[in-house]
Image (cartoon, rainbow, N blue to C red; front, side):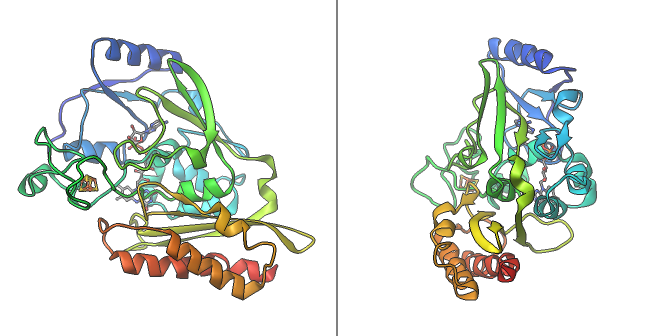
Amino acid sequence: MRMPPFKLHTPNSLEEAFEIAKSIQSEGGDFDWIAGGTDLLPNYKWHLNPKDNVISLAKIDVLTKLSPTHIGAMVRIQDLAESETTHPVLAKSANSIASILIRRSGTVGGNICLDTRCYWYNQTEDWRETIDWCHKCDCGTGADCRVIPNQNTLCVATYQADLAPVLMCMGAKVHLISVEGKREMPLNNFFELDGMTRNKLIPGELLTHITIPKDISNWSGDYQKLRQRESWDFPEAGVAVLWKKENNKLKELRVATTGLESIPGYHDELASNLIHDWNGKASISLLSEQIRKAVKPVQNTWYSTSYRRKMVRVLTKRACEGLLEV
Ligand SMILES: Cc1cc2nc3c(=O)[nH]c(=O)nc-3n(C[C@H](O)[C@H](O)[C@H](O)COP(=O)(O)OP(=O)(O)OC[C@H]3O[C@@H](n4cnc5c(N)ncnc54)[C@H](O)[C@@H]3O)c2cc1C
Ligand code: SF4
């Protein structure tokens, strides 16, 4: 597992980063941004689509700001989990990510932009050669997708990051910057239903920070996760539920899932349709069953798809337990 050679660039500011990016692109080259490197570097070692150039965001101070309504892309996951200003549900999901060592290096931006995963893909180069590669890293062979064959256009690798579903329920926005300027969008609109494209970032664009609405402290909720080993595994399924009440009455309810498709799922209508006739346990059971039906996992992670879907119902019920106090 030798690391392929690449040139590492370490700019001190966003301006310098984009000058480097422009010069690489003008020479017809390609690059990846690197934040903590906890995902990118293992992928490079397995020769999963490595680039000749890597631009580090580590020295760009403006990306490290953390406040109750602003999370810089280079905020370390452990710092987010430990901060007193972090909403408890977001802190819980951050704390469930990998192990403390990975959380100390891994960043919020890297977690949101995490590459999708698939057991036909996240393997060594030798292993992948024995199965004649696959569409996401076909090594010039035009190989097909192993999970949904005979289409050769779509990759259905799974998005397995924990922060996104909670941030989606919080109504978070992502802020992006490229040589063409700045833009922002709700995190709910950021992802692209293709395991290779992954999200709306255009080539050379990066995520600078995430903003969270000011009223988030009025929301309660929970995050529940299914994984093989509690010590550090990726989510095989994850369910975030957030709610807001007024005068002890449920006013708003949001549900999002992860680890089940190429993008995290935001189940806005399913949740809000139930509020009007909310009936405690019965409504929670109905919601849990509806979320189970809404998710469409494919067989490319450790557990079977039927088990993951069954567990989505269980996780949703568990995440809604606090609602019984409403
Ligand atoms: C053993 C192990 C267990 C893990 N378990 C979990 C888990 O349980 N839950 C979970 O959510 N994750 C898990 N992870 C993944 C880990 O959370 C991510 O590796 C981490 O969040 C990625 O952050 P990073 O800063 O290291 O990103 P990097 O590895 O540096 O980058 C990841 C990707 O994001 C891109 N990127 C990084 N920052 C930006 C930016 N600001 N703008 C645009 N693109 C950017 C990079 O180009 C790259 O494609 C695990 C990883 C390992 C190795
Ligand atoms: S979903 Fe298909 S194309 Fe994507 S990584 Fe897996 S086997 Fe490859």
